[in-house]
Structures are given as structure tokens and as C-alpha cells.
Image (cartoon, rainbow, N blue to C red; front, side):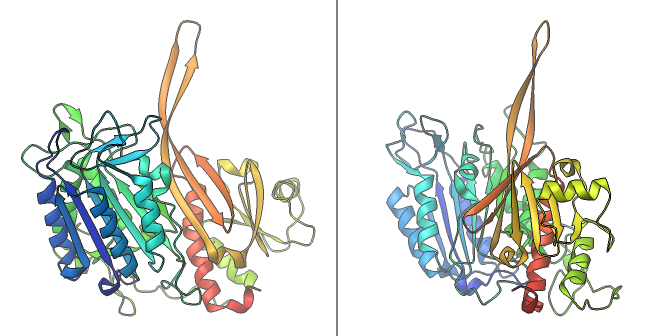
Amino acid sequence: MPLPDPAGSRAVLVGVEDYRPLTPLPGVVAGVRRLADLLCDPHVWGLPRDHVTVLDARPSADEILTAVRDAGAATTDTLLVYFAGHGLRGRERTELYLATADADENDVAIGTLPYRTLLDLAKRTASRARRRITFLDCCYSGLAISMGGSAAVLERPDPAQPLSDGYSGPGSWIMTSASGTERSFTSPGGYPYFTGALIGVLENGIRGAGPVLSLDRIAKEVIERLRTREHQGRPVPRPHCGDRNLMGDEPWVRNRAPEAGRAAPVRDGLPGRAAPAPPRYAEPMDFVDALRLLLLRTGITLVPDGVSGGWRMRWLRWRAGLRRTERLIGHLKSPYARTGAMVFTDTHLCLRSGTRWQIPYARLRGASLDTSHERVTTTTVTDQTGISEEHLVFITRLSVGQQALEFREHSPGEVQQALRTFLPLIGELHQRHPEWFP
């Protein structure tokens, strides 16, 4: 899979440093300028200089919106927006406001740019863009994920043209320096911690990660580099990510680590692709055989051909709401299997999470997948006291047209991983054999 096309991509980098009356943030401008240099470096991404807009020191909300509007209108591949500065929360603590130089922390109506306004503008003006990438380095930036930062729906420029050599589609990906309740920090005498970690990954690469780096691989490395960092005795917040349409799996930049090119072989001239293993199966002759192969690669439990009886099979069919004429091909064997979370037939993907949903395989080409997580506190009451525990809930939301279904798991688990693996494979099969998808 190739990197995003620099000729069709644009970046808007915003760094607000000279605050009054809020605390100035030294190091923000230096971070923005260094990121601009790296994005233009041909050994990283190779954006043309005039495709990168840098707004630093004291940009106004109108200047930021104008830059994003112009960049979005010119983008046909990837639009990147980066903001570093102060972040403020609204009265209900559910809305993120990006603070400009004259912001008032006691009244978000003064000197701020509502993140929702920025998001809506990017969605509207980048209608030809294939991907959007957002980095937010500010307090409470994780609110952007719940506000839709990873769920922007961009119109696909030409539905007949695939965006890559597998499943793809208009997508967005966001990474934030903190959750929606945490503050971000700036390293004394250096870059903000989050920006510094990102710069470090782009500058030095990741050893053993191959010649190109995906967004998710970069995010994992940034999180690892910040894991043990402290600011004035307090842990630096853990960054958060949101993803739509499997954007995180796509390569973004080249890996500058020494000998990175040796870490992964090349296939068909495309970097980062392993040489194909000898084929284990003959080319399938019909859709069902092809589907079985896809499910094997996804890790789905297959139902032996011709097996339809037994109480478990009858129970799975009933939970999935299958018609008598449908053939049961496979199902996800996981803790969710008790509720029939994911069942595959010869005609439909059947999902259940509170409600039941049957999706024809042909419609999955227009599906989108959002992943995020949130912290949930549960309290157990005993005879003497209440014990509170905080844990992460991993959220997977599949949307097809106007319909959507959401799964909430206590581990980054089976449903999410199965969908992330299956959707590209079924999309690739659709491209090879459109006749199998009436």
C-alpha cells in the first residue's frame, strides 16, 4: 500500500505560544516548525513546502479556519491538521475549545475556536479528500474523539475507484495528547511532551518496524515513549486515538530508523509487504469457498459443510435470526458468542449487540468502522464501604449507510479485531469478483 500522495495532500500546523492572560507555552512554536520540516523531508513524507501552512505565535480563530478551509479545498488525498496550545472545556465539560492567544479560561466564548466548528469545516471543505489525520496537543484534547474527531464522513471522489489495494474508503484518524479530563504538559526548556515524542518518532524512526510506518504503529511508539515520563512528579497523560475506516492500518510516512528497509521484504515493488507464502489452497470457484478462506484468515470458527443440526447450531441460528434457507458458514467464538455477536452465512454478516442486524456482504464495501475507548468507574458496595474501580471500555462502531451497531468490550478484543481483519478481505474479494456480490 503506497504512502499518501504528497502532491494531493496538505497540512495545517497551528502552534499557539504567546498567551495572554493564559500561561505562555514556550516550545510550542519550535515544535510546530520542526514538524513542518519533517513532513517536508523526502525521507519522511515529502510534502512540498507550499503544501504546508504553519500558523504560530498568535494566530486567530479566523486565520486557523481560513487555512483549514483553503487546505481542505486543495486536498485530494490526505489533509493533516495539527494543533498545539491550551485546550478548554465548556460548561457541560463535553465540548473542547481550542484556545487562541487572547482566550479567557473563565469564559470559552472569548478567544477560542470550538473544535466542533473546526471539525465541521474540515468535513465540508475536504469533500474530495480520501483521508484526514488530526493531532491535538492540548488539555482535555480527548474530548475531540467523543465529539466525532474520528467519525468524519468524507464523500468519496469516485466510488468506482478503490482507494487502495484492499478494503478502504473515506477515513479519518485522530490522536490526542490526553483524555477528555486530563491536562497536557510542556517539557521545561523543550517541546510539549506529546509533540516531542511524535517528533522523535518521525526523526529517528522505529527499529525493526519496516520501511514505512502506519499511524497506529507511530501511536503505539509515542505512547510507549511517554509511558514513564513525569512532569513535576505527576505522570504525563497517556495519548488517545480514534479511527474510522481502518485508517490506522494505512502507512503514513517512511521509517528513518537505521536499516529500516531490511526489516520487511518487498512484494510487487510495494514497501512493507512480505513476500507471499506458497499458496495452500486452489483458487476458490465460488463465493462460499472464498468466504471460508477469508474467515480462516480472520480467525473465525468455521462450521463444517453440511452441518446444520445440534442444539448449538440451532441456538446460533435462532440468535442470529437466520432464515431456513441460509447456510451457516462460521461464527466468532468469544465471550460475546453467548449472545451471537458475529455470525456469517452464505449471504449475510449477522451482528448482535443489544439489537440484531443482518448485512448483505455487498453492502460491506460502503461500511465504516470507528474505534475508540473510554474510562468507566464502577463501584462495588460492601457492608462497610464502597470500592470504586476504573477500567477501560473499548468501543467498536460499525456503520453501513444510515444504520450503525456498537460493541463495547472490556479488552481490545475479538469483535473489534475480527472486523478490522475481515472488512479489508471482503473488500478485496469484491474487487476481484464483483459478480459474486449482486
